[in-house]
Length: 537
Image (cartoon, rainbow, N blue to C red; front, side, top):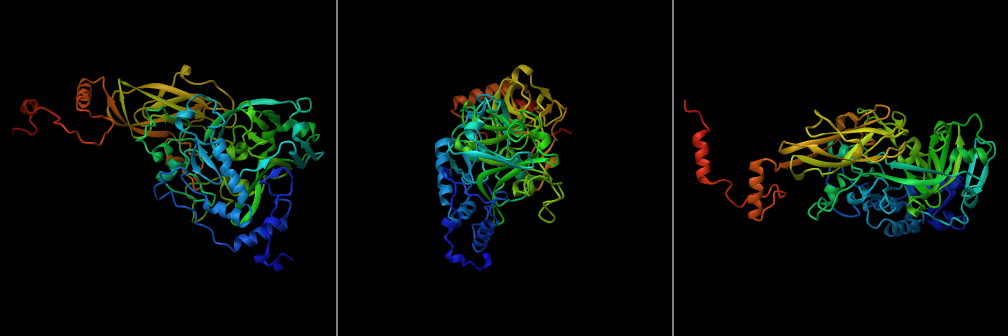
């Protein structure tokens, strides 16, 4: 009996050992209820590091920004520290130049200057949002199991899956986006849930900045406020629909959802799982929309991106694109895995800690239309000649494509459309990068914002408050930045800039007082006597 086990005598390395040769870092939980129960009993006896507070206090100006102490401790207690170590080694090899938002489970953001290099994000720069450690699986012994409500349950070797004579291959350009993209905007105004897997404070942007913008005097925190959890890649694989038809002979009539099981270990309130999510069958039956992918941008999947095999679900939140997928179950209902049934939920603004339940939020699947300004940075001083150059990204999920991007220099009263020639190519499942030289006459602090219209005429809520939700997901409101405008096409401004230069000063150091007289005394007196400050009678 499980209740009779002396927990102090449990050999965790033996009880929770890897069982499949060539599958290092993979522990099977879902097939062994007693193993899961034992792990929970052990975890219940331990005290773990509290979740860090970062919503009511400033984010650390470090890299890694946040440390996943609690998640590491979960693994260590169960004898799985090797997974933690290998995961960080993989980060150092495959993602050395990322902003390490969370070290474990790894969450990494692309730097701005890298993201705006083109519509396709390179493998080494593509963002990462992992929910567990990185397994090390040998493709020569890897196989995927398909079961549940299918006509013929099967196991397919990796070699057979990649054989084009057995399964026709597809290549699809896809933007993957975490539903937490731009979460920092919600946190800054209205803090929300602090999940035990840390609702990472992802930035709003999608792309990046040139070297002048990312100069050393701009802090990491400022950079984080504008970095995206989005990335676009070309994936090669086989449509899940084809696998179900060719290998399994199709699904049974009762099948309504397809569940994906990943080889990483996941924790929720001291319960242990393999990562599990699902998508509706109606999504899978569209040929190119759910892919079993082994190639990313012409190369084998990096280990951190799911090697040897991952799911790519187009137009849905990134959490549904299960990495290291090794089992697929055809189900009558959505997966009961916690990532599907208890997380990634969208609540009304009146739901919070006082009344939140798993059942009073709906599951987030397709991503809404959204966009962001990547250049310039928020609170940046911009010297210009009557036009300010803006760069950014725009995206819509669910098979909708970006039709139009509009920007405003007055907070959203007057909008200017980005010229079509200044936007990258349209794709059904990928973002568009854009650029515009925005007419700007006014000086001083201005609020710029962006909104996108997709092919179904959807657009974005005007303000963050309009879309705030307790879980801090899908920040789809108009992205806003404030810039300090210096228009040197104005004579007085051009004159002052010259004086600043002569004194070795810089208008970009906005709050530093000038160390010279702002006006000649005679000029001042002449003007004031002509236009007195006070009435004469």
